[in-house]
Length: 252
Image (cartoon, rainbow, N blue to C red; front, side, top):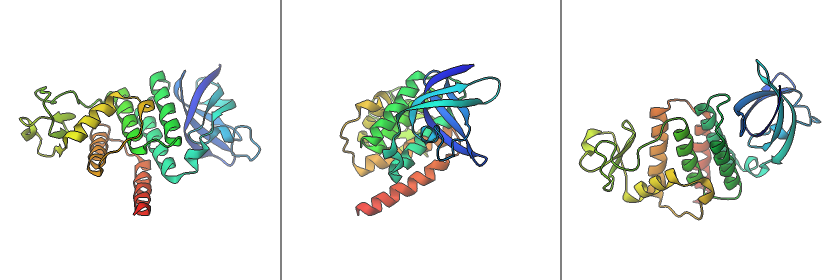
C-alpha cells in the first residue's frame, strides 16, 4: 500500500554501500522505519530529505515488512541545527528519547506537533535547556511516566514542596521529606519552573532568565527521573553533556 505522511527524520543509519534505513516520526502513522534505497548516492533525490531533523512529506510503500521510501518533498531542512554542534547534540538527544519511548505505528499527532515546534524553536534561538526539559516532560507523559507536580506525592499537600523524590515520582512536602532520604532538595523557584514546564507548550517559550542553581536542579531531576523510571540507555546524552561543557568553557 502506498501512503503519504508528514514526517520528521529522527534517525538514519547506513545500510550497505548506498542505502539508508530512516526512522520517521509521522503525524499520520506514528513512528515508522523505511528503507531509502540509494539515499547515500550523491545524486539521489532522497539524500537531502533523509538528513536528521528534516521535515517533509514522505511517500512510502508499506506492507508486512519494512516500508520503502519512494519519494520525499522537503518542508524544512533544518540545516541550522545540523551546522551547530550544541544544537545538533540537543536535537539528537530529544529525538533519541522520543525514539526510545514510542512504539512503531503508535499515532500521536500532538507529540508530532510538539517535536516539530521544539526543533523549530531550537533553530530560531530559543533557550535549549528549557526546550529540552519541556519536551522531556511531554514525551515522558506520552509514554505513561508523568511526575506528580500538583502536590506532595504522598499526602497531596499543595504547600511549597521542599524536595523531589525520584523513586516516588514527584514532589515531597516538608512533612513527608523523611520518606525518601535520597530525595533531591529543591528551591521554590525550581518547583515553580518545573510545574510551569509540565503545562506549557514549546511555542510559548520566550526569553528565559534562570539562575544557574535552578538550571542545575532541573537537569538533575529530569535526568534522574528518566534513568529511574524509563531505564533506557541514551547514547546521545554523553555527547550533549560534552557539548554543553565545551560551550560553557568558551563563555568563561
